[in-house]
Length: 384
Image (cartoon, rainbow, N blue to C red; front, top):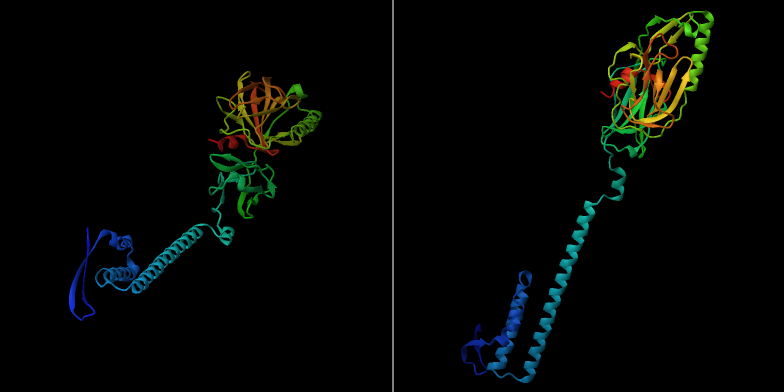
């Protein structure tokens, strides 16, 4: 479409004329070419259009001298160069500002070097169960706070390092309290890889120790002073041979521990003192009622470490469950596994009997945590 331009103009003869100029598309293309420029360049755009129009008017209607036309063209060219230079510079400045703003925004979203050092770790805490702990009791320790096991550098109780494993999606540890440990408050501590240490006090209470009389069966010499002396001496030897058994560094189990018999009835609890002549012998396990030939099961997955006959313990199996947790099965009539076997939770490992220091068929179960004998009934209860 033609572009109309109107302007009152006086010629050299002083006659005022109103000129209506119709510019063809070939002369108006320069205006249309820059018509997309807006905003702060509007004034420059208008000036550019007017100067170009005036040049055309001089050339078409007043037959201006060639030199004048040349000068006007040069002026228009100079203005055009300046205009596009200003546009280019402004666009470059805008692009640079946008890039700087983008970088600044990215930097603000990234943690700064100093901030990385001070980012707080998710708060961790220690908890344990059961709430009441007595001499001879086991207890479970949990590291709460969504802390990965790899982040835990060391977990200790009373200054001694304890193993950590994952249980129920939490870093967990098993601790055993010796039957003769002095009642009082002891420190449970967790040290993390970033240097943080958290502490928790654990109060150990006194266990009531009931003393019951127990003689010596005729097969072991009967109730004589010599038999009593031999019983105590050989018990010490048996216990020494069953201490310090190698254990796996990692827990070999993931499922909860289970009882060793299908039907459970305790006939002699852990921790009672048995009066035998002049000696008082602590019962370091629990006796379960089991007729001779009753199937005995592994309380959890593990590796068989001992299959041996002892004078007082009789036919014995020891299973290592890893990280110092051991289960002991005494007085068996038959052993169905061998050293080095990997047994599964609930697997039949032997038959109950009356071998060793016993007056009748039953199963004696002992549980040890890092060579500390604990109450097996309470140990199994931790996983119910």
